[in-house]
Amino acid sequence: MESLRFHRNNRSYELLMGVCCMIISRQLATQDSGDVHFASFVDNQELHALYEKFVLEYFRRHHRNLHASAKEIPRQASDGAPGYLPRLQTNITLSSSTRTLIIDTKCYSRILKTNAFGNEILSPAHLNQIESYVAHEQFDNSKEVEGMLLYALTDRDEERSEHWQEVGMDLYCYTLDLGREFHEIEIQLDKIAALLG
Image (cartoon, rainbow, N blue to C red; front, top):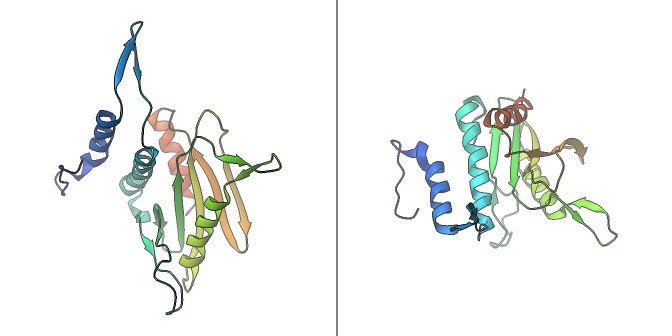
């Protein structure tokens, strides 16, 4: 991918080329008993980046009115804040005239973790991350800001479309089933876009 250059004439092929490059560089086909098998992805970061890019580009193409972007949220910290504070880089930010939805895409083998007491819980790190994004974006902003964790659904988890309020924030935990036909995936993403009215 490093040798490919994308510009306005071929930008629409960037996602497709990314998939092709990932398959060529990370998987080797083998044949056992007439069946073709592929090795597992070596780098989950590439898979996560592909999932994130797919969702972002879907909203950019099919919901242009929501101004989908992967924006950096200004950190609302004092002048004396240390320089090593992490950037607040969103995966996807959707904005209407009155509302903003920040989507953090997640691509893991399991959505819920098991804590020390054997209870299933949402990852505290994931929840803290989306809450931080919402809090910083809401600061001195007249728009209503909401946050969503959007997990790629695996066969080990169940579908989720949950909404709750916490410390004045509207938060969501949704799953996206990429194993469905594309028109069904569109329906799932369109429901997310509809949250912004």
